[in-house]
Amino acid sequence: MNNSYTHIVNLAKEVKPPSDGILTRTLFNGDDVKAVIFGFGQDEELSEHTASMPAILHFLQGEVKLRLGDDTVEAQPGTWIHMPPELKHSVKAKTPVIMLLLLLKK
Image (cartoon, rainbow, N blue to C red; front, top):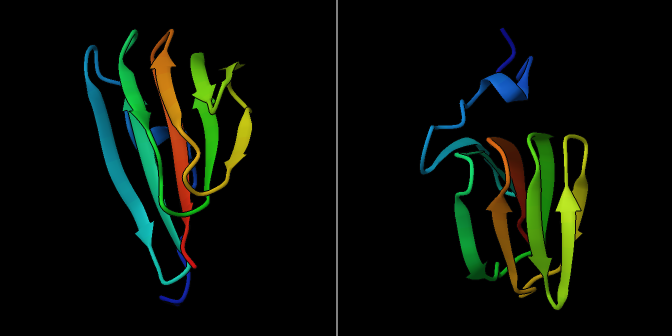
């Protein structure tokens, strides 16, 4: 077996959104990228914060309202967002949500 890659058949099955709260699981942590899967219960929120590195949000399940800087946007399954370092952002789950976060290390 080749151990030089990571293979996940179905990202959405890597975490189940809880009935309340937020679950996270690190799927991969390499030299250039860290992949974390999130499960949000309905109405759960990550309050405003920043990341020190560029980040990508990919929504796999559910609907959310996001604050990205001064903008408010909606996300649904298939939504993909790239954020530069230090962008203030928050995430509010309108339904149970599964989200993949990719932190791009420099």
